[in-house]
Image 1 (cartoon, rainbow, N blue to C red):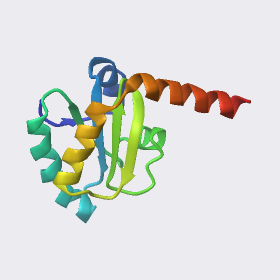
Image 2: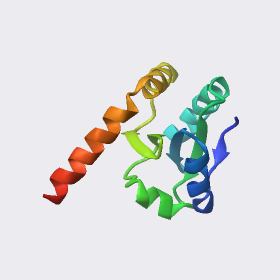
Image 3: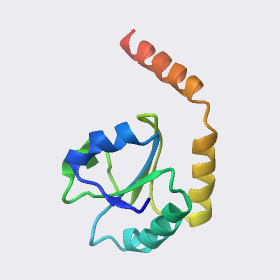
Image 4: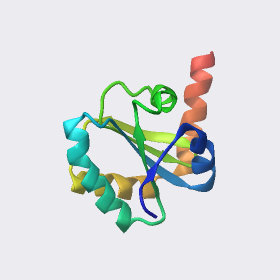
Length: 124
């Protein structure tokens, strides 16, 4: 699967139809974003089972706000519609590969329990 230039109206369909989604929040004027872009593209080609989405924060302010993006580039990993990792700043390709490995190895049953516990604590 190639990199998707994600629009807000495609978000729901993208997370419904893909178990794992990785978002790269960026802007045209951002130097580090431009440096990271080719790394993101290259790694996306190695993982056709993952949806790699680039989100232009200037065009898709609603998505950037939803993910509370405060600086760019920002990477967000989502699995089974749960955000499991968010990192501002570009990362090297080997770190992205390691993150993907950890993402695939996650015990999602435990993640859901942790999310439920955190929500219950917040509501208490």
